Length: 348
Image (cartoon, rainbow, N blue to C red):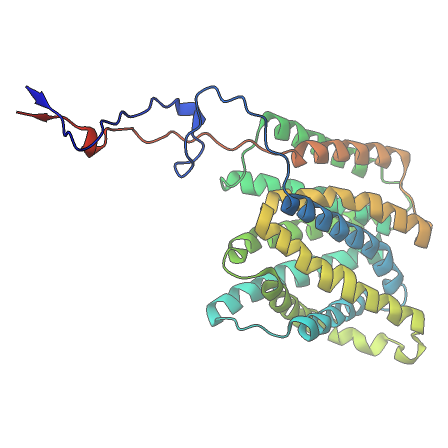
């Protein structure tokens, strides 16, 4: 005979459809849930607006940095920009406490994302137009970031994203094919811009795990300081070539702008976005940079890109849009559902 506990109600385990559970910690929804997707939150909108601001600042940095390398060697231009940026960060944020182990990792980030990136960035500017760099770097960095994070299992490559990657790669090939044969070092400079994109992708990917433990301002101030120190050592042999007394107010105002806004402010905001939305999504926003970069290069420098390059850039824009679309979370197989002890029958 089967006897039930009379002081406890009999509870039955619900029948759960396996596709309705996306994570074990989420309460399962009814099978065949057709509720509409919730709208974006205020935080989502704020992060996207901040990313647009960051991309506008970085887009302007290409033309402004090109103006700087016309007056001083590219090594010195890069060092001055990040020296001013480091001073601004330290004044505003001071120096937060950092454990030695974390300091070494953050310093490594600075060597990759500040020193490595800017050596390639300013060297490329000394050889090729700023308009080329404003397309190559922001277009290639997200593609490299997405591919690497997918290989590491952090990002899912959906058919839509695969199509976006294909469009971006084809657009990049068309862009390089369309480079005018001007007889200079433009092609070499554009290839160096590719190196800058790889450095930035590494900076984004390597920074994501650290941002899970440390705040974006803390990581930014120490990474910028480490990278600036390396840039200073790299630029030291070129200091003697600079006519310091001949540099006018316009040059120093331009350096102050580069150091405070596209460097100090933009780096903090970008790493804050990486910590909240992940490296792939944050890097995808870099596809907005060419619009701002090309506009500034045309207004400040009178530069433009060739028609074939424009066609390649358009393909990369399409790839950007496809890659920036939200990815559905992976389905997680739910654990086996068993009866609770209180509902089990006791056989007599």
